[in-house]
Length: 114
Image (cartoon, rainbow, N blue to C red; front, side, top):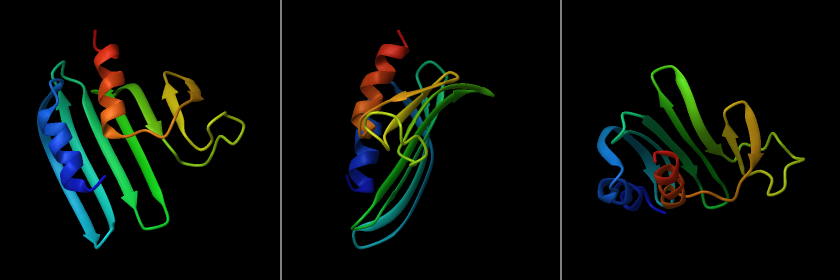
């Protein structure tokens, strides 16, 4: 998903209070994107995505102050998990995940925020 589409998704989400920071570097279909948003409950989320024509790396990291809430990423460091390299850091546990997008993360966060 191009950076502008990701920003549009965040802007239109009912659980995003404001976009705090955006940095985009890119040429053609390759880019590095960093975004920080504040959620309506005060949590912060850092969205990071690096995409080239052959690779997509991402991290969606949610926290409150110094308290870690949850993170989804696809750094290839848990090969034993089903769905490798996709995984979720949930508290002190690392569990399997799927290939996450900003839309999927926002849907999961809606459930966590209830």
